[in-house]
Every structure is written in C-alpha cells, then in structure tokens.
Image (cartoon, rainbow, N blue to C red):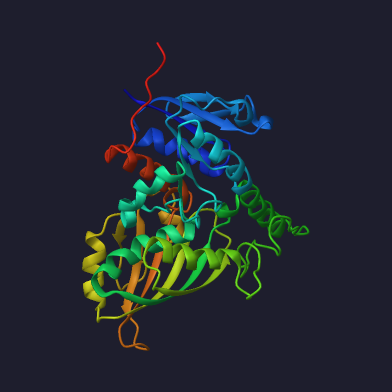
Length: 344
C-alpha cells in the first residue's frame, strides 16, 4: 500500500519543486494533495504527468494523510504543523520555525539520518536552512576523518532563496538597467541587479544577520556542537543555486588530495576540481541538479591544518525540496512509518 502525501505551499518555488522531485524519484504515493492558502484555491500544480488542483489548507482533513511536506513559511508552520501532526501525519517542515526545538530533529540524511527517529516526540522533522544543508553535506565526511575545529564561510546566495517575488525583482531590475529606466527595489533593501547585497535576512543585536546565525546554530545541531563557525551571507544576482567559499581548520592534518578522495566517495557530493580555466562548478551548472558540488579544494597555509574549498548546490533542491523528500524516504526505508489503512 502506498502513502498519502500532502504538500503545503504547493504554489511556491519550493512547493512546486517538491512535487517535481516526488514524481521524479517515483515516491511510493498512492495519493498526492496540493495545498495552499485560500487565495490559491483552483490553481494548478504539476505532479509528473498529472495536474493537481490546489486545495485550501484551512479546510483540509489530514486524518488519512501519512506525510506532510510543509513549505509555507514559519508563521503557517507554527500554527498548522502541530495540528497536522496531531491528526497522525508526519510533518517535514522547510521553515525555520522548528529547527532549534530540542524535541524536533533537524535532518540532512547524508549527515545525521540516525537522528530521524526523534520525530516521535512532536511528529515534526525540520529541514535546515538552504545554505546550511549544502555546507554540512561537504563538512561531514571531512569531520569524520580529521575533526573540524573552525569554519569560516562566505556565501553567494541566489535570489530564489527569497521567493518568487525576489526572482521577479531581479528580472525586472535587469530589464530596467538595459532600458535605462529607474531601478526600483521592493523585495531587497538595495538594488540586486548587477550588484551584491551583504545582507540575507534581518540584522540581530550582535551585527550578524539571522541567516548567518542560522548557519552557526544549525551546523552545531546537525554536525557537532563543538565546531566554531562564522559566516558572512551575501545575496548575488543569480536566479538559482547558492555558492559558498569555505575555510576549514582541523584538529588533525588533512591534505587537499586526501580531502578530494574522501569527498569523491561521500554521499551527495560530487567533486569537480581541475586546476585549469573552467575546472570548477558555477551556480548556473548546479541548477536543476541534486548533488552538492565541491571545487577548488586547496590547503590553507595560514593555519596548521586547514583547507579551502568552493561549494555549490541548487538551493531549491538540496537546500529545500530534495532534502525534505529524502527525509520522507528515510522514514519509509527505516520502517519508521507505515501507510494508514484506508477506509473501506
């Protein structure tokens, strides 16, 4: 018997990608439901070769739903995830609402799949921030080998991480530049076209942004609380895929050649690292792909045991939708959930 799956936020960038990936990976679902707010009722969402009519979250009965993939923002998740879990569905949430709740596992399957069983406490599993997800996929196998002490990361984050309106703003601003029209900034605090903005999310009291804080606390929760990490998160005029320049300091020596060999064998990682023009991966090439790409692996001569690398991944896929689907697959493969019996 297959599973009944609901996707909440099915009209958004990540929700649509969730439906695409569920179809691509032939997820064992007998029934798929697309849900969103009341204003989206009647809209259509593609699911493989079929088209789903979007239904209203507010009026939906979750009593026969097995898995709910939630991508409707933190406020919606705070209100609805506990209700959906109480109805008996396992909620896999893409927002930041539950990530730091000690009773909610924060999961990247390639990194800490063993923690997924903790979902039984609240019926909710959290998906990490998109910039954190790709980072820990690359860090995990290296940490297992040489134990990471400190990480310094600078991100180059695409506008899709801020939603459909942000993508439309980059498109509109780019057109305005070419047409010599006034460039209007609505979604971002400054113009994004042909520019970079050293602010992702809101500022906190210590001068870091919330996105930077998320990378710190989520990496500690997923990988190791002893790792020291500092981040500078930057929005760049790219539509899809986040890039990261990462400096890593280890407790034990680890050469660039050893790191390449380890990462080539690591789940979810794909090393493209030739010391020649174009011998690396860019965000354009990573868009639409599942892997976390790692390039420009080299030793850092400024510390005793350090490496530098370039990490790129599709933020809508591994950073959000794909990771959520992989979590659902993990639940099934580990026989942690069973499909509910359908009424006769």
